[in-house]
Length: 374
Image (cartoon, rainbow, N blue to C red; front, side, top):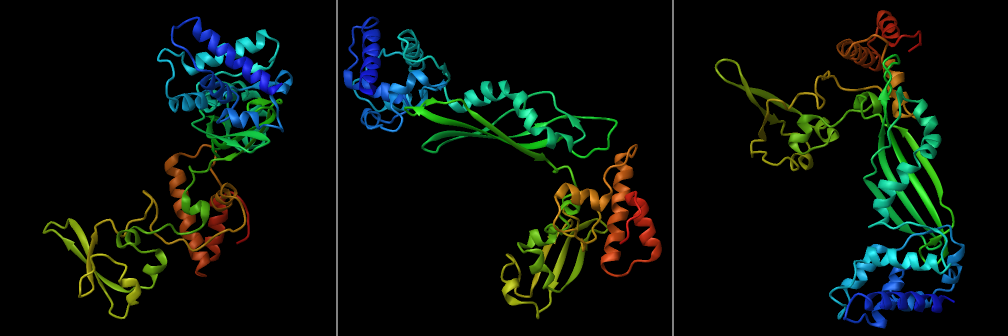
């Protein structure tokens, strides 16, 4: 039956073209185009299909003709008629003929690419199903989600017995003013699986799975991860923080007559590890180098320059941020939040260094809005 169906479709194409043109469409070319229509790279590959024969096409739920593969195949043929109809129009014609002949009653998806169809049609139509599976992650935010996200990263994987579509995106909601801010965006992944049934493009009903978590890019990276980020000085010297910690140097400021800081001149101790000094490009023979006026600033704008010494391991970044800061407080302005976080940062460092007082502990508990013991 698969051979007959392939020949039938090839005849459809040739007869349709003959009715519109004086140029002939070769039978071999028509067969190759039909093979691509069903998702195969050649007529021989279509004929070799044993596991998912085309005679099951009448039973499929979804049929997705491979328009890009038809375009690719016809670009490699010599002697195609110059006035041959565009691939997507050939697909529409074949799908209609198969339906008229009672050979395919499936829901046929015809689009320039499957990736575009998924992003622009299918996934937006499935938004209710997607939202249902994301309800748990949504509950962790202080936002409501109304619009469908824009899917710009859609990938297709042919896994033999199934075709899998994986779409990744950020799903942004509308923050609720009466709740403390704890994130309004989800990082989400949608996986749609199409089990094969007939050929490479005839499928059973799809299976949809969604995963998501709160995007916490809004939180202070140091407070989220409890580690120091690479310092500006280390970045300028091309070193890691660990490399920099192993060095000793004297710093001289280079200022104008009116006190404007131009840059810093560093002179490294001759006992510094030579393998570290060798990494510094531009280091002079007398172990000096100039760095920018901002080299000793924090890598994050408007943040304290004190090093981070504390961490809370083995919990999620969002939970860690809440644990370490108390989160946003109702009625708190951005400036008030900044001031409170700076003070928390300083007190936690004193605790980590063993230099805290009873007043520090009480003050930290107050700033966090609880009575925890530290």
